[in-house]
Image 1 (spheres, one colour):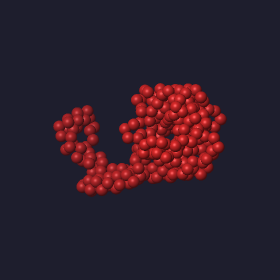
Image 2 (spheres, one colour):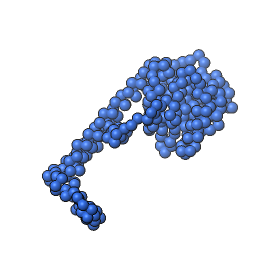
Image 3 (cartoon, helix red, strand yellow):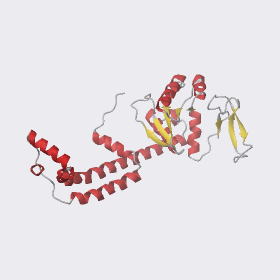
Image 4 (cartoon, one colour):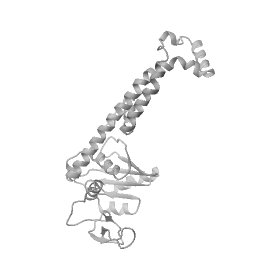
Length: 285
């Protein structure tokens, strides 16, 4: 898929959309409040009043004036810059806020759709929506999420998530028919190591091969298959995950057994543990 081309204005709007809407709107009002009095200080300069240089000597003189007293040389441009800025900045921030609200509504709709119909995660949404859904699940677990905006379904790292000072890289694979193999996991591990991230996640709506699980268990990567993702979605919404006759370990895919915490502050709490414990320490809540 070819990379999209964006104009500078579109890039500024996308940058403003990274801010929460409740921050963009006050910032736009603040920009108007600050710039409007500056724009009203005097008449807007004309081309004649700006005295544009028409020779090399005049250009050199203008450069010298800027070096000697930049404030005085640029003073005629202040009303013009303020006049343009009082409309441009609030407009960009306002459009960014609308875009941010729209994205938030879309993410909420995707989350509710996946919560009410888990099968939609693999069959009812496309790969772009799958990435947004995964990002929303991380957000609801307390992570700050950055969408990298890669131009294809296999474009490398799809999300960068942060919790505290730790940064994690996330790759999403909405593969319906194929299992995610060890090659994908190795590639992400290479990026995690190269960028010095705290760890990484590979999230799929399907499942992983045994080689992929073994490699992930040997390094700082977490594999989230479709079953685990359903549990995450249910947990983020405060619901109990749907019961299954057999639950599989998210690490080694072995059957899981119900255990009870016997020590510590969570004594008496039940959880699912891998039947291969202590060789495998996979758990589910």
